[in-house]
Amino acid sequence: MAVIFVNLIAMIIDFFADKYINVAIEVSVSVLLALNIIYLLKSAKIQKSAYLFLLIISTALFTQIYINHFASMSVVFILLLPLTTMLFISFKHSLIITFVLFLIMGILLYIEHLNNPLNPLTQNSQALFNLAYTALIIYFFGLLYHLANLKTFDELEESNRQKELLLKEVHHRVKNNLNVIASIIGLQAIGVSKDEKEQLLKSKTRIESIAMVHEMLYRCDDFEHIDFNDYIKKLSTLLTGMYAQDREIEIAIDASEVPLSLDVMIHLGIITNELITNSIKYAFDAKKGLIHITLTCKDDNILFTYEDGGRGYENPSELFNSKSLGIKLIKLSSKQLGGTLKLTSPKGLRYEIKFKNG
Image 1 (cartoon, rainbow, N blue to C red):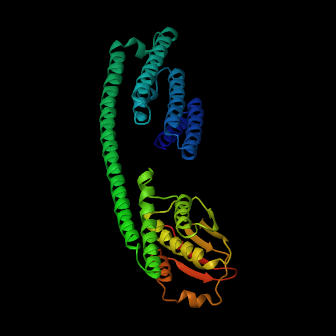
Image 2: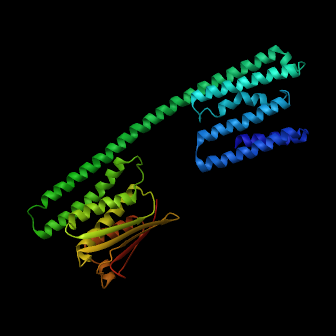
């Protein structure tokens, strides 16, 4: 954008100086650079865009140098050109490109000397020496700047790598600690009454649903977002294996590819854990059942829908206002999401939770 701006100023100056060939070149360059910016925004290929930038600008500058017989500021811009892309291309390629640019400059100077031997620039050895000396000084300081930036980037990458390892270790330990607690509760469930065992196993799966979130964060590279599909599949496998070993309960998941944060996923995990557990235990008369879970997103507004297609409930509002721990957890988690919870029973039970992703 900066080069386009400078190019437009040069175009205005050349227009009033009646240098229409220069104007045509500068208009073409501005258009091509604008197209390159569009390409960069769409593809996000910075290195390829940097090479295109170099090709467009160097072609235009060398053309102006040749046409104007070196009586142009383009000579100075050629010296500065490699510095503009050093951060976006490899060090080796930067050296090669600089060598090629200086070689072309030397060839053009030789051609100018042959065609216009009276050109003051080619006749002035001191001016040529100053030009070469300036080019070397500019590139020398450019290399120092480039190497300093590389060192800084390497240090930042190492720092980020250590932080990622530390964060992975934190999630790994949290997951392990939660699983230890779940195992202790599982051991407590041995040798107790049926009702007590049922409540303990429910608490165990609630803890395991949270531990699963930390496990997914530990195993993936994105520490901020969790894939909803993968999480619900793992959670449903855990719950059907615990509560529906002798039944055929199918859980269909239809979710948009919406990245969900740790807090959002934990709350949805608690809600889904309660809903699937209740459906498996109470919703189906036969040994078969279908649960449908959907997650859709529109303009950062997320709609979570759960339908079990079971026997339903005659008075959903009565269930909604019940004192059971499961319903309390569902309502509390929905509130912590900043969402609204709606319970209906068209055919089976249908839960809708609307909230904002953030």
